[in-house]
Image 1 (cartoon, rainbow, N blue to C red):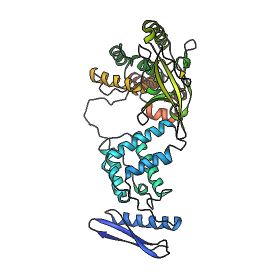
Image 2: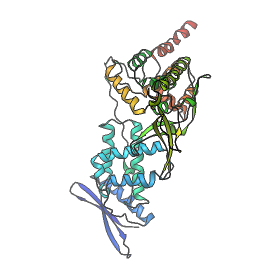
Image 3: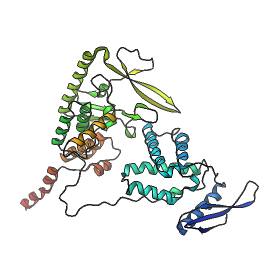
Image 4: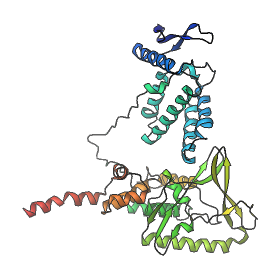
Length: 418
C-alpha cells in the first residue's frame, strides 16, 4: 500500500503519497487539496486506493476544464447511444460552464472546493431549476469520470465529494398574493390568442392548450399525424434548432415515445380552418409559396433529420423528402420553436396578468384542466407521454380554485348525512 500524508501550505492543505515511476523507483507525488484537513485526508485515501487498484499516475496534461469538457463531448458523448436531443442539451451545458471562470482553470488545479462553490452558485445565485441542475450534474460527473478513465488525466473524481444543495424556499407570511400555479385561466388564454391573432405563434399556442404538447412537438406535427375525422393526433417527432450544427432538425420526442392524443371539437375546428387557410395560401402565393423538406445527414455515427425550405419552383435534390408541417407561415415556411417562444415572450410583456407566462405553461394548464374535471391520472399520464404516473401527479397537480372549493364542500354532505 502506498504511503501518504497531508500538510498545510498557506490556507490550503495538500496531500502526497509515494508511487513507482517507470523505473520501479518510489517517488513522491503531491496534489492540491482543500482548506479542510479532513476533506484533504479523504482525498488522499481515495487517491491511494485508486492508485492501488489502477496502478497508474495521472498524466500532468496542461489542459483546462473547458478542454476536458470538449474532449468528453467528442470522444464519449457523441459516439454513445444518447439521443440527439440529449447530446445537444449536454453541449449547451458545456458552453455555459466554459463561460464561467472555472472553465479556464487548469484541470489539475480544479478541486472539490472549486466545484462545490460553482455548483452552489448555480442554485443559490442563478436560481437554476432542478431540471437544469440535473444537466450540469450529469455533465460534470461524466466529464470527470472520463478524465480519470480512460484519459487518466487525474487520479480520482473530485465530483464525488460534491453535495447538491437546494434553494431555500421563501414566502411572506402575511402576503395576500396567491401562489403561482404555473397555469393560465381560459380568460387569459383568450386574451393571449387575441393578442397573437396575426402571429404564426397562434396555431402552436392553440394546439398546445388543447393537447398539452411541448413546443418542439407542436412544430414537428405534420398533417399525416392528424386524423380530423376521429379527432386524434399522433406525436412522433420534435423540432429543434441545433446551434452546434447551425441546422433545424426533427428528431424523436422526449424518451423516444410515440403517443396518441385525442382532442376536442374546438381544436378540430381550429385545425380544419388552418388546413383551409394553407390551401388558400398555396393558391395566393403561387410560385412564391415554399415547400418544406427533410434530408438525412450522418455525422460521427449519428443520424440527423435536417429541415429545409425551398420555393415551389425549385427542383429539390434527390435525397430531399417533402414534409407537410401543420404549423407554417403564410408563405408555407415551417414555424420554428424559437419564433413561437419569441412571440410568447412578447405577449407576456404586453398582457396584464401574464407576466410569468411561457409556452410550457400551456402543458401545465392542459393537465390541470383534465385533472380538475375528473380525468383519470393514468389517462393524463399517457396523453402527456410521462413514463410514470407519479411524475404527472407530482409536477402537474394544480387543481383549479373551483375544483378545490367543490372538494372542500364534500364535507357538507357528510354532515348532512349524519
